[in-house]
Image 1 (cartoon, rainbow, N blue to C red):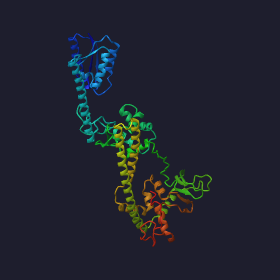
Image 2: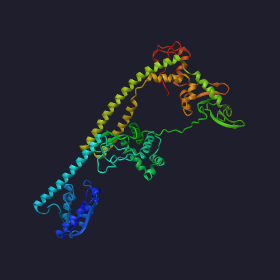
Image 3: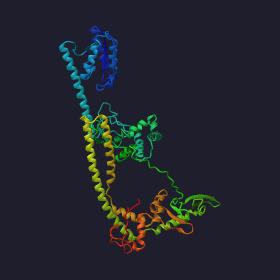
Image 4: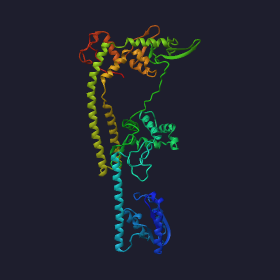
Length: 530
């Protein structure tokens, strides 16, 4: 009688131990006692009882098929080494019968006798039952960890596994950040959420430049970036997702990014946000460049520095060659001094600042009510969308949706949830001391010239743009002309001017406070440009 031996273990640890070798020794001893000639031994190393990837078993069955009529028995240590599912057990058993082989177990009495057949069926059922119990216990344990806010599996790149130093023990704490990789990925995600990178390849190149390539020992592929911005994104935002139900749970691990940044990344990847990075044309040596307008050709002045016998000389001048003021420079120090004096002429008086403060307080109270109502609306909408999402998962489970329909509907509802969460975040206004803020603002605008000098050179162009949205005209020898001002200063200028401009009670409230004996002129647009 001739036969083959098939041995299998369920983990790599058993491969490194004695289980596999012991099975083979006992199977060989059984064959010797039964006078079975061993043609070949098939060893399945580390094949999990739950996986269908049983390559060596397939090789063994193919060997039996090719040698049909030359092999009599298929020897295993136990029935559960052969298969851990009753249906699979008898499916493979049927193949062995077709190839003319009988199944033999070293430790269990199975065979062709009715009692032996019954016992084999019971063993196969018990093996399946044991496997199901193990799987359920494992699943329940993982669910318990998820509910505690701990990721029970290996975390994505950027974190260290919580039990990496204690092999064989379960996780009891969240995964800590990897000191080297965590800050690199955090920087990448935060900058991507701001629209700084135009492509995944550009982000991958930046990560390698920052040191990820050196740490990992290989170049960062775009496939990794795709996982970083997709599959692992919620984990990086501090959210754990139940893989069976799709439910989300706040994790205890340290997040790399905020949830708002996560939503923005999702919108960018969905093509609903654009990179708005602009070229910086700021020159710190000439802060009034592009703000001062030539009265002759209405082109903005530029600046340049020339070298003379006494050293360097800086000038503002018109760059339009067709303009009569071309090459007629204005000394940098003189123009900037005149600009500071001009700022004093548009600085509001104290009576206007008092009206301004009361007006903003009333306006804030009115707008905060609107924002609260908006937030309540989005909260209600978000609750409805979450209920729809749960319904979609339920319909997938009961078979109402096919897999493709489920994926499409899930993607649609998640996009709507993301957009609604962003709207809700923007509608929520933090409480703060508005009166204190207004007092600071009043002190700021009382002396614009000093503020301009105190600002860092890089902030001066923005300050100028806020005050003079269309620039300010200047004529050499005559000084500054009348410029369009931002809303606050425009109202102040009107208030200081002709009193015939005052209007009915539909203007900005309150209407009873004095402003040179009048009320504020009406303005139906927004109060601020900044």
